[in-house]
Amino acid sequence: MKALQYRTIGSAPEVVEIPQPEPGPGQVVLKVTAAGVCHSDEFIMGLPEDQYIYGLPLTLGHEGTGIVHALGDGVQHLAVGDAVAVYGPWGCGRCHNCAEGKENYCTNAAAEGIQPPGLGSPGSMAEYMLIDDPRHLVPLGDLDPVQNVSLTDAGLTPYHAIKLSLAKLGAGTTAVVIGTGGLGHVGIQILRALSGATVIALDVNEEKLELARHVGAHTAILSNEAAVDTVRELTGGRGANAVFDFVGAQPTVDLAGKMVATEGDVSIVGIGGGTLPVGFGVIAYDAAVRTPYWGSRGELIEVLDLARSGHLSVEVETFSLDEAPRAYERLHEGSIRGRAVIVPNA
Ligand code: NAD
Ligand code: ZN
Ligand code: ZN
Image 1 (tube, helix red, strand yellow):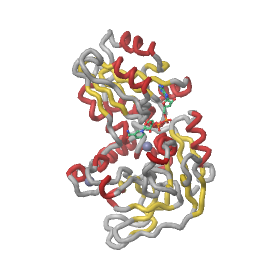
Image 2 (spheres, protein in one colour):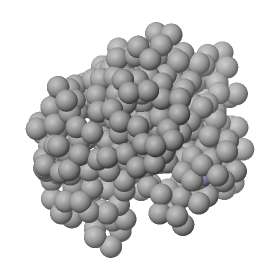
Image 3 (cartoon, helix red, strand yellow):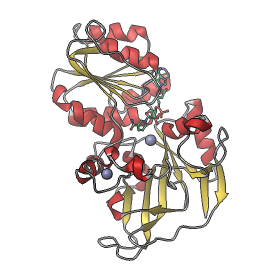
Image 4 (cartoon, rainbow, N blue to C red):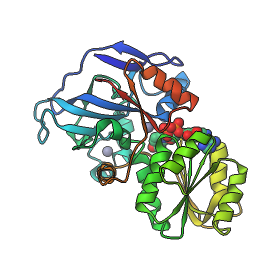
């Protein structure tokens, strides 16, 4: 079968021919219907050899949907032909966090060498994909796979971050979204659906700001020092009750720290390497700073329900598997509107 693999440190991913996976006992093989392109893929492919821990060759793709193609011995409650979405942050399934469905915070994964698909295990950018356990699949139902595959990360990650701050986002409050790309443009929609907050979006790209307005931001402004004053003006000097930084670079983390209100939250979601000092005099009183990672299985079910009820619409640009390297070039250029999605069996 065809797959998109990262094979050489520092090189672009390549379309290659590899053996089709067979399910072992308790495993499932999917015929992949869609696979999303995340900025985190670019991040890991940019790591130097001594920091790269994901194995080579690596079949990319940590956002996936598929049709159940084959069941290993003992798999119950799934049938060939079922439409499913892949829960990506695989954990051990036994620890306390996994028992709560929070496999994103599994306490055994690192020690046991358990890695998510596309981030260590073979991912969704292939015609077929091996799932280690049916626990890592949730029903997709009649949701369109191409339109909704990115909810498994670009939806789930902002959903998890926003849910942690919802108690601070009642009517009359303000939320700031920094970076309105794949994650950010879904984050804006989640804020509009779940909170009473006025949403201010920041980006460095005018087309992304237009997308932010299109998906529901009340205000969309350039991401620079002047944005701090604008946010203060729009909030009567108070600042934002929650800031979601989907870039996480030093300039954006600095802005987030300057914009946050007393008792507000800063969630650094983007892995841009920025750090935010916390202490008296450097950030608003009682502000909390978080670094949320992905989300729980229960939250993935909730995100898909939110899409089913018509509240989420991912902007998608589709590519075939052969065109997938180009999708990564376009992501690098910053010219993808919303999310790039690979359709391996088009
Ligand atoms: P993306 O490329 O689709 O979007 C990034 C957006 O940020 C673009 O619109 C870009 O124009 C904008 N941007 C860049 N620099 C900016 C700046 N200085 N100020 C404001 N906006 C700026 O990326 P994505 O796939 O949405 O991923 C976003 C980030 O989140 C990445 O760092 C990714 O690795 C990370 N991520 C984290 C998690 C997690 O669990 N914490 C999960 C998925 C992705
Ligand atoms: Zn991702
Ligand atoms: Zn676990």
